[in-house]
Image 1 (spheres, rainbow over the protein chains, first blue to last red):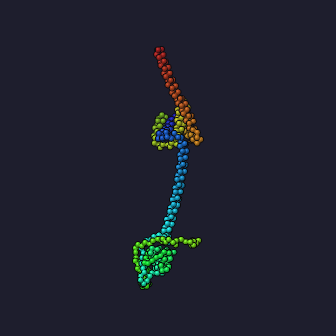
Image 2: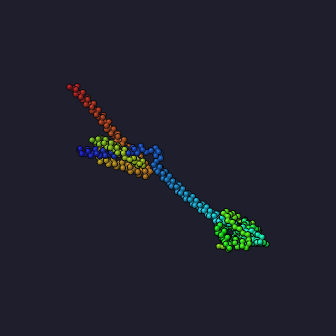
Image 3: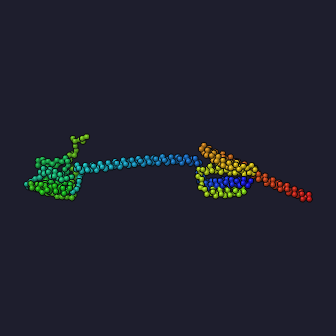
Length: 234
Length: 132
């Protein structure tokens, strides 16, 4: 009888512990949860809402990523276009300088040739001088501000000199841009140099070295720079 | 002795319940229905004790199986999108009221009988004194 009572008491006690502890836990849960906000919308609805919002978020973020990718692509393209444009511009500038379409400045030498009582300057003298200057590495040459380009001719017609089909008269000022040392030493070699040879022939030639020479662009009215017959070979 | 066990159990249970971490709100519905089922079992037990046909095995099995079944039915209802827990609440609360009514009637009858007996005893005593 007593034993039975003890077991019953323990069992009832355990049951009480279980029930009351669970009840208190539930009380606390209910107290701590913001039921008003949640109870308005049922849990299932909330879940579906969360799912739909998540899906929307993912969709939007995917779109953002795609758009960013496109933006990047466009930017890259724009950059490459800019790069090519820059390259082309650079090339164009260099080509223009090469063919003499732009005014250029730089260090170099100026050679003055003038007629005297005995000897006149001939077109051959100028041709030879230009050849010498080119050999010495002149990058731009002009005679009396007539730019010497690859199509330039220097001819003598009826005792007058034509450069770029325009008349040029003495005194002649030949400007050359290039390495000063090379240019000046090439012309002033003892005995075999241009200046020595021609002064010994009795012609008046002087040379000066300048830090800053300006050579004008090719600006002849004649269209020397246009090709009628030449085409690019493929 | 059983009363002491109940009181001690309630105190320990309260301490445990206050100290364990809170249950997520998602599961608190199941817990609530389990509590209702357990309370129903408790009241059923009290009623059967008063009726003198209390069986420990039936009480314990009812206590746990009812709670678990109520939880399972709630889960099923959630899956079926039918609020089965409402049915469980109605059944359990209805039975709780039945049991409470039985308990109330038992005590009311007990008190009335006691009064009647006391009255009867008093009249018997008076009669006896008069006879003397």
